[in-house]
Image (cartoon, rainbow, N blue to C red; front, side, top):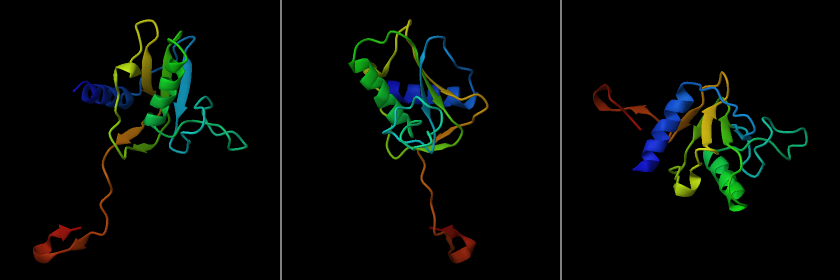
Length: 137
């Protein structure tokens, strides 16, 4: 149940375009054109296409897990989502190890002016008109 609460809270946080930028924080960027194999440190892909933002919330979550595996966090972590749609193909599972602390919180937020959409829906295509004027797929 706590995972659902976090997702709802994250959706609200993303929806209001919260300001971010904790002083001294580790910042990870996420963008629809990103790549989960990249570091997430740059806001946009580099000229060589070898580094840039993460592509998904799960990729960012896993990067924070890897950071925490090296030892306790020593500074806050800001995960900043660029404008765009982030399609979830599976549930974004968050566990106790994904939590920050009072001194080192982990924050998911929209970039300034961005309105990211996190969607678990799927596109329904091949609509056709059926009997009685009803549409079906």
